[in-house]
Image 1 (spheres, one colour):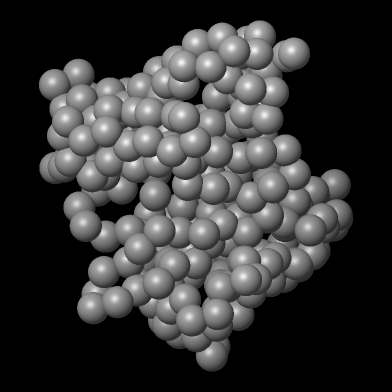
Image 2 (cartoon, each protein chain N blue to C red; image 1 turned 90 degrees about the horizontal axis):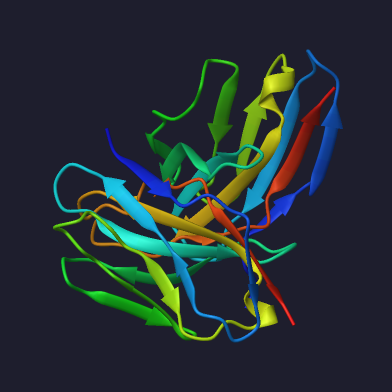
Length: 113
Length: 116
């Protein structure tokens, strides 16, 4: 079946450190891939997405590249800030339909000054 | 503009009771989704509405769970004979749907359900 695996957290980094959160997926066909973020006390927000192989999604300094050969979509940011502290979810949908987003378990990130 | 809203934000109920959770989608969004997020896990899909009808209810765990959207806007998730295992955050999302294709889902803040 379709599934998403993420690196386990919690991840604690100092401000301005480099961030990588690993994500791999299993899916039939050609999925679209997403990173969602959940800030404390807020709802899930779409952070970035990529809809086909080799696409790079980017937003707010975060980037992720859709790697079909390794079935991966790792999230990176060159210099994290305290305000980036949140839970990050890798997710996918299969086909062109946006129903039934399949989420990974989430990775909690804490950035300390 | 207003986002997706959910009420109540917290609900504590006793095992065996009936609960209703409400979702107000973004105005004009024809697609509506319910997810359940257990502690330490990602959200899991429950049901998807196109307008008033349930287009996909394959994620509902059993027949104690039911959802309606009678006028194609507000939706209510209903849980009968609640069990402690139903404790979770229930998330609602909505999206535009044009020409049969859906777009980005916008999530509400969730309802935290605790069954004692």
